[in-house]
Amino acid sequence: MSEIEMYSDRFQAPAAVTAYELEEYGLGSYSSRVWQWQQPVLEQLLRAARCQRSGPTRLLDFACGTGRVLASVEALVEEATGIDISDNMAALARQKCRRAQVWVGDILRQPELLDKDYDVVTAFRFLLNAEPAQRRRVLSRLRTVVREPEGLLVANVHGNSRSLRHPAILWRRWRARSQPAGTLLNEMSPAEAKTLLRECGFRVVRQFGFGVLPPTLYRTPLRGPAAAMDKMLAGDNLWRDCSIDMMFVCQPC
Ligand SMILES: C[S@@+](CC[C@H](N)C(=O)[O-])C[C@H]1O[C@@H](n2cnc3c(N)ncnc32)[C@H](O)[C@@H]1O
Image (cartoon, rainbow, N blue to C red; front, side, top):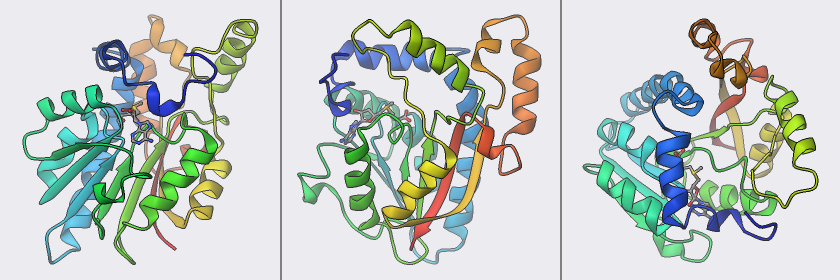
């Protein structure tokens, strides 16, 4: 990625879509493991949200990408919509989803893309790598479409700077110091993430953490015990602020 490439352009090319699908989420990848722990928690949250409503539950998956999240939750709600800025990511999402509608566009420039009063808005793997100003614009826009007062935003930050991922990021930054920017090496602390959410009109009502041990362990023969330990530590517990992937459940404030 060149220094001036915007995050919204990063997944436009077919090669980036393939890499995301087959490498980032390839069989046995670290990201797939995290999703294995995260998915049941998200599903449980959606079931609970649906139980609390008398009417149909409407979900928006912002930056739905390849439909990884959308395809797994669409059956849990009456109406599911995915939006992404990349045609190629959205095309794959349409192949995976059976019921959800998938739209392509920019929610900041095309207000007609969004409805309002969504019961749940999900935004996975967007906040960490989007440009700071873009994160704020997007969150503030999403804030206007979450149902008041009990609607939910479920968003994650998959690079906690207070986690054991941090030393590897420092090392990779040092190694990459003289090369053009290509790999995303962003981080955010739990406090930074919560401040961002609060400043954009959301209060965190629950926080879950996934993946405490260094991801490098998963490239060694210790991957089995590491996965067992990480699975045990995942959830809304004392480890959440030092977990690599932090998932925030928020309501409008
Ligand atoms: C890392 S992928 C995450 C996809 C999906 N949410 C997931 O967790 O698998 C990031 C996605 O954000 C999308 N994206 C980036 N900027 C965007 C924007 N301004 N509006 C909508 N989608 C955007 C990209 O096209 C890409 O599909």
